[in-house]
Length: 355
Image 1 (spheres, rainbow, N blue to C red):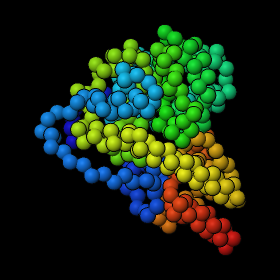
Image 2: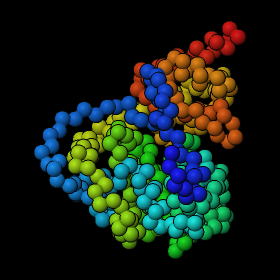
Image 3: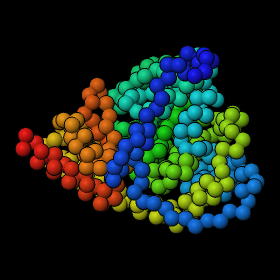
Image 4: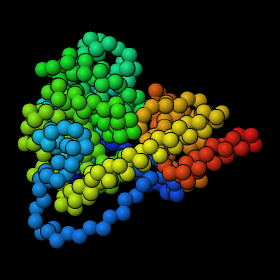
């Protein structure tokens, strides 16, 4: 054991608990909002003895075309998580600055801020949804970065681009509004990406992990004005993207691959509607958050039903939300995987009747 003292913020740090952190065993995995569609690739590499392009031009060009922005507005990162970390590391001064978040939301905003000794102004999703922009701006206070997860994980809540624009306008010269669009392909018409052309203090984070079915690749993008990205380009690691990752990402962004992705999204969105109907018909589900994204978050009448699902090999994501520990997030899987959810719901009913 080392005798070297840790910085106080690291000593107190509570690490992010990902869906893969717990070494669970199961047969059906609906706990990490992954796509059920596996990509099969055949690729050859004869240049791995050379360092990669820090920002692979083919990928930048392809993503700029997909997102309908200029190439200069795109920065490729190791997942959207690195985008979060880069923004905090670039724009926030440790032990001085703060960020604002709207809970419940994605846990990495807090973990990253805590890691860098950045204070957190924790507001609620209800405030974000219901307060007018003047009230919100006052509540945000001196926060340097304002994270809006849109759609929000785990609630699925969605804020209209008009509200994000109004907030960015009020915060000009004071703060950067970071719109995390990890799940935007499931409701792409609601994107805020056009705002980066109007507001120099808006950043949009994207990923290939969800709809593009490449969670194992760890590819993300930061979309923003050239001026906002310039200091981030100074901070990012010199070779953040490997040659292998860049080539696979480029194949995922061809016209045919994007068409396939959208087809898969349509299938998953229809499957989600079917799942919601099953949940609505179950007497053991007391609340359903019918938001956007490839997941449904619900409240059970008894959290022990989760234990029953795990015994069947069905792995979903339990949550503590709004002070209650009987919430569950179910990722949208394929037809066979969701059939396991339907069977579980029916077996919960049988167990309850026997008791």
